[in-house]
Each structure stands twice: as structure tokens, then as C-alpha cells.
Image (cartoon, rainbow over all chains, first blue to last red; front, side):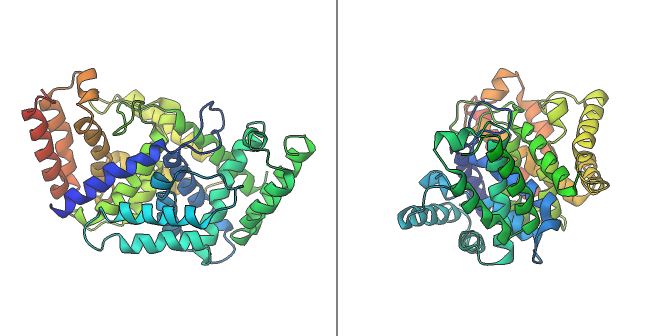
Length: 192
Length: 192
């Protein structure tokens, strides 16, 4: 098989991300979001928020990271952030990413697998910022959507505050703004 | 309003791209594709196809271009590639992109408006490659989906070949591969 045929096979296979359903609804929509449109949304969000990163980042690496960050869900499915991630889920996702990247011509996928791992580990400035931005849309969905996902999954105010305060690891300004909005939601009874 | 609040307003507003329906169905899905998930798909496709660009390109600029290339559809809607684009449609899209980018802090949107225009004009190497990649998924959707969109919109083989041969302006190797597949589809009676 020619190398370009393998890339096209990859392009067809990753379409499956369009059928992975997430736990929140986009603002103004009745249906749940899928992980492909979410991936677009966080990439463009990161680009527009890049000046709020606390540490120097390479925004193009951040965007590449976010383009692939959810590929593991094609084989492993989406999990709500408020559930604790098991080692099993993590290893299913890693195997799924590996399977997809192995569709590419020999060796071409290696750098992307390392980039995916970097995002998962969240230790570098790029990964911390990418992970911070990844948290923002689901919060906006809840804030603009009557807290639908918080209610449905019975997530407490403390849990929302605790988990999302990690946004501050990538951008203190972004967490400051989101925290203000979450406090407002708590005052309005949207978040309990 | 603080600058970061304006960026968050932009992030909420662009979610509307998730409800713009396109003319083809992703491989394996019964529903039509939306322009947000399509945007993700072409960004990642471009990244994996970057070595097939005929001229030197800046893949990160290409990806930024593709992240925003469909934003005009939020106000103007999606049009099938096989319909001739009117000046009115084009100017509605430009006004739509302007409106969205004006949500951003003062002056921040200007470079992205120019990038959007560059994609539309298709004159630079980056834009030619971005436009070439943008053509590929709808062809794959038809090739793997019984030619559903070609049939529905009564698009002839000649029109498909003619319009998509523009892929060669960005990547001859990519067009060569797609042309081979389209000829195969014509032989199988999928494309008439």
C-alpha cells in the first residue's frame, strides 16, 4: 500500500470521533456534544486564549495536542471528568491511540503518540495550558445551560470548584474568570 | 468588559458552527456532518498530509486557516461546493466572520480576518494546500457512502472531476490518489 493510502485510511478511521458522545450540550443545542466538534472548539479557544498562559507556550504544539487529545475515546469512549479515571480506562485509551496512529505510514505516528502522552501527563507548560483550555467549554455549557450536566450527574459545587481549579495550573487569569462565574452560578442556585 | 470576558463570549458564539449542517454524512453515520466537526477533521487531515504539499507550506498557518475557514457559515449557512458561489453569499460570509472576530478584544481579530480572506482567495501555497485538504473528506464520504450526496444533488461525474481536480493545485499526489478512486467509483456506477 502506498503511504498516502495509509494516511487516507487514517483520515477515514478517525471520523469515528464524530460519534463519541460527551456529557454536555453545546450552548443553545438540545443534543449532546461529540468529541470531534469539541476538539475543534478547544483548538480555536486555545488560539484565542494563548496570551493568558502563565508560562511560555508553543501555541502550535498546544493546538496539535488538542487536535489529537481525544482520539483515545474512539476505542475507549468518553468519561465524565468528575469520575475518577481508572488505570484500565487510561490504558484502553493509550492502546486506542496507538492503534489509530499505527494506520499511518511506518513510524509517522510516533511523535503524535508522545504528544498525546504529554497531554495526558500534564507536566509541561504546553500540556498544562492545553488541559486548562479543555476544561472551559463544559463549564460554559453548564453555566449557559442551567447546569444540566452538573444536575444530571449530581456533581457538587465543591467537586466542580476542586477539579476545575486545575485550570489555574495553565492560566491563573482564566481560572480567576471561571471561578467568578462559578461562584455566581452557586449564588443563583445553579450549582449546589 | 475585561479582554478575557470578550474572548469567552467569542468562544460561546462560535459554538453555533456545531449546528451548521453540511451536505455529506461522515463514513458510517446516518446523520449529516456539521461544520465544526468537519473543521477538526480537516485540521488533523492537513497535519497528516503535510508532506504531500507541492510547495513549501507553513503547516501551522494552514491549521489556523482551517480552524477558522468555515466561521462565515454561522451567519451565511453552508453551500454545496457544486453550486456556483454568488458574490452575495461571499459577502455574507465575510460579514459573518467580521462580526464574530469583532467580539474579540480590540484589533485581536484582524490577523484572523486576513487569514480567512487568504483561504478564500486561494492564491498562496498555504491556502492552496488548505483548500486541497478541505475537498478530501466529502469525497471520502461519498466514496465510502454509496455516493449519497452526488446522487441526492444530481452531481455528474464530469462536475466532480472538474471541481475536485483543483486539489492538484495544492498537492498533485493527493489529487492523483483521489482521481484514481473517483475513476473506480465511476466504473462501479457510483458516480455517473
